[in-house]
Length: 123
Length: 438
Image (cartoon, rainbow over all chains, first blue to last red; front, side, top):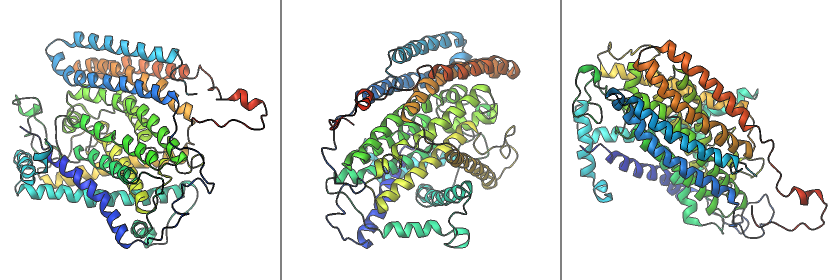
């Protein structure tokens, strides 16, 4: 049986239409009096200097890496959580629980390592 | 896979299956058109008045009256705002990436819309006539589900919801990056770091709910709460609910987590270069997202449209329409209370400092979520499966109290963050060399 994912596709287009519709209306009725000043980058009236798209600090990258680690953890945790009740009914409750404790401890060690090495510290 | 989705005949054929199971008469397209109407008219309408409610309440919190000029009690204010927004000139900076600049608010809107697709607001039938996902057949009446009144009812509901919600990170980053404005870029970098960090506690705090339900379906979660009582009513449930609310407020960039748009530091953050209707789209998407996470919290922890300790009106009211009026009404009241909580928090707490913000996510919320998953498993074994809630409270509550106190203390051991470039600041240098990295 295919669930009704079709509506999600429909909703996607509805959301795009809902966002683009008013913009079309704006293009039709709103005034268009562009000028050099209006096209400037807004920095509180001061003329912008230098390049905007610069390199950012490594800190952001470390958080991104940690995020990926924990996001993948979620991918493992969700199926475990879904199947726990059914397996517990079959008598595997303790086994499944211990398995997940081991998994969580391994991740906790990873988090503790990042914490201890100062990677979680915002500088 | 995209091609069949584009085919309206395919859409209608799939929609018909859901209808047949629900036992509702009428052509499939009517059902789909009805939901589209709800999404395109009712939800934006609700959101428009949420904005008004926030302005009114913020006024009261600050000892002002709030908007009261347009219509009685300012009730026509949202309409006036909409007219103003569409008649304002659309400004895009010359140096901006024009297409991505347009794409960003649209992406945020898509994310806010898609989240609401799986929320069950009521029931499609007052009989337990739905076979739970994953089962070929239900052994008896009690193990069947009440079919939920959701636009899309799928076995992977919660996973889908989280995937849809995390789309907003892209919108925020693209908005700041495409504007080619330093303040917007700082705002969006902050936004990405914050959303990515708080997404983990948001996702992990939902694991107890899945554990107790044994399903990712939000309809299944609603039915499990009919059997077990609200998921809020246990120590791990309370902890998970609080964690979810905190992480969700951060996910929608609300105060005290509104650093991506901190107006006292970086103008307006990632939407600095947006004006008129494009800014209006950001605004609308943000409030739609608040509405969405409030619905999520109500559906997962506050028992959907039921009252605590009872399944009324299910089981006593036979009329589907009457039951839905009651369920959706109670659901709406709970969502309103959740949204009021968000406004209240905004009026009460000052904005957090960026290092404390990241600390709080990684050193308090995430470890607590991990502990809470194990506590939730213990509660399931003792409080639910063995049927000894009192013993469950005695076992789980002390663990959680110790964990909260421990992680809060531990997160504070490092002291304040070092000030970058402190050595150069201390010596008065006439011409400081400009740093190229922000």
